[in-house]
Image (cartoon, rainbow, N blue to C red; front, side, top):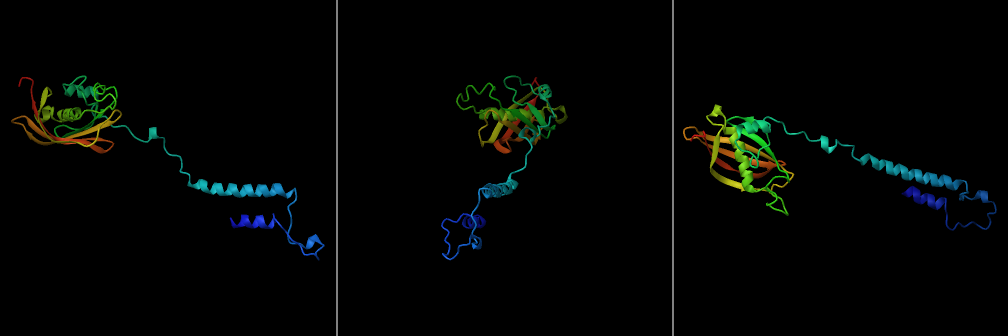
Length: 223
């Protein structure tokens, strides 16, 4: 900035004065630009501006990985066909799309892809599609069924029912476009009575949207 001010003073003086005794212009330290020097001065000025701008380009972030390649897909431990072989539910009440972690008789993590095509959205609500809380609880119970409906832990692949729901809390609304990730963990099992107590949490984007404790009764179709 100082160099620019100095140049404007020495090269383009606004009101130069000369002593009356000086008749020889060569003795003056002030020199006026000629028509040939003007383009050079303009070029030099442009070069200074260009150099200044290029120094700022170092702060521009480098190209990042495209967003469509940045996030891996959830793994598939049980696909929808395998889920249908375990759960008795069918359309429109099968609310589990994929199991991404499975420990029979211990725990399971599954996902429900919430889409605007789900049959409950036209009525809940037409202007603001929100997944009903009772259906979130139902989806979590179905994941619990995947944990318990295995012969290895004394269960059955035929029926299971709610026996109780405690401490259920809804933290945030789940809307169309969300991926509901549900974890169900067995806390206590009474094989004699066919009662299982489970803890469940549901997440969207890593944040808890629903949680609670579930009592489930399991048994064969003849009971």
